[in-house]
Length: 322
Image 1 (tube, rainbow, N blue to C red):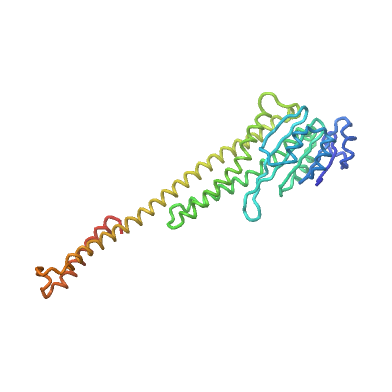
Image 2: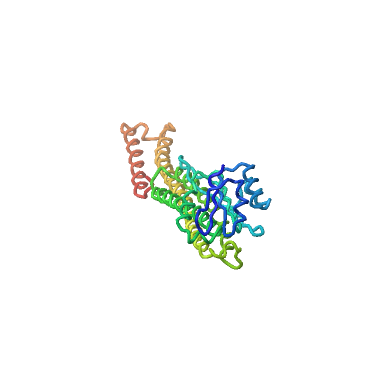
């Protein structure tokens, strides 16, 4: 679906145009066209391919989706793919895609499965005509910066969730549930990392060494995006290491809890084993057993069994087994 199709000249909005008028405005000097599509159909993407003379391989990637974040150069055109990471109303983490084509006199953005709008990017760019004069390179930076900045709240939410889980590590009876929560959290961290890490490597190519001509005037702005991605990469690595440590601590706590249960069972088994031993001896019914015919034999046997069990209980309690 077409969201916007606008022509710009000298950093200012020239006109809202129809897709069939794009070729006419592309011929104007110092003019570029910025088109935004959302969940575009094949017909819409193919129409843009004809208008902007896009490379068929890049168009195929934009149509099929599910691409790894990347930035590729096709002649005078840059093609970028980014993952838009967002929470659903049910607090599930989902991933959409934003594809950007940037040429000397055009920018085409296509977002698929992305609930959040990018209209704020256009409004921000139009408020800075001195920056918009830099052309498609600045627009590409503005879109990438907006997508990358939306990773920060997601990472902060993951950090808060991990802190909440860590606060319950030493609470009894929640080990299994916490292990499940930490493992799900680690999967979310991996999802965000898959969006950040490849993009970090790709953006690095726009700030070091040979820079594509489109980005030459905005290299320092892409460096800002690169710095953000580096910070996110570091935060995600720390989160993943902490989550791994949390899982190990939970497993250790589970082992300790099992050990405590085993010690308690062993202690009670020892107490009952002593009682069973006495009962077994006095229950053999041999004739030559003086205590069998003694008037106080039965109470004495019960007393010995009780005293022995009491001493064992005291010793196990002192040792911390009970």
